[in-house]
Length: 169
Image (cartoon, rainbow, N blue to C red):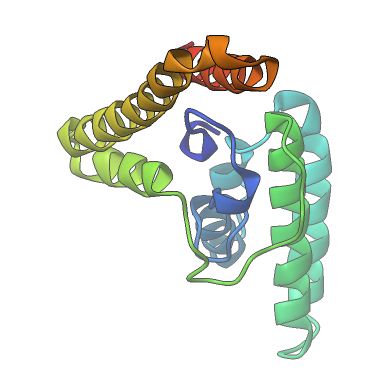
């Protein structure tokens, strides 16, 4: 899902695997409506059958009583999020509780989509890139001044140089 992507993948800070994230939000709505359609967008077409099957199991188990409902819901949420994460090429490490910290870029992306304004997201990302490149440039420039003093100092320069170039890349 687009919402779970940032400039640098950070699975621990994604929110498609949280109980208050967009995948589970759509899953709750699907279960209440007894219609799997709202969640199918979160999975690749080749995984749709597995999600439809898990959904049917969850809907059936939900009817067994109030004790069964949370278990059925959890089963469906976990299955859906796991399959979604696999489709992104990201590991599934379990559902995270509601309120789990989310990467600021992801939160800003969601807000941009909800409000229809990308400006705050662009400002946030531009500021982070500015800060990141300035830090790495300063370290590389300082290390360069001493690179010829010894092999060790030269290696320190190369390490700072490579970090700066890879960040810029």
